[in-house]
Length: 70
Image (cartoon, rainbow, N blue to C red; front, side):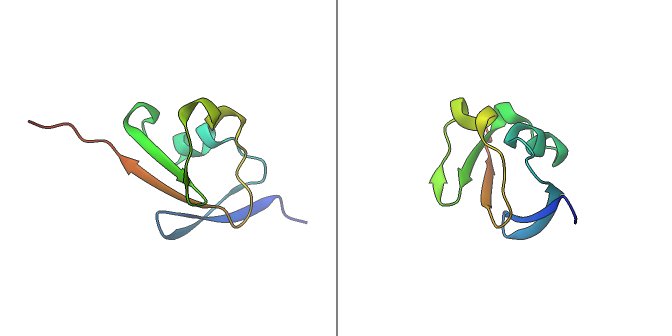
């Protein structure tokens, strides 16, 4: 029995360990958590809920990087 799951991140299938916390997944994927917004299964996930969110097989994440400019 494998403890790996498959989820979709920005339209691409990705694998990670079961019960991975969202902040850990974001770090593994190389995102700076201070500069992103996360849509989790179709809903914007407020930052205050990130640490309690564990990704599950079949989850869909859209991660948007915030870019400043002038």
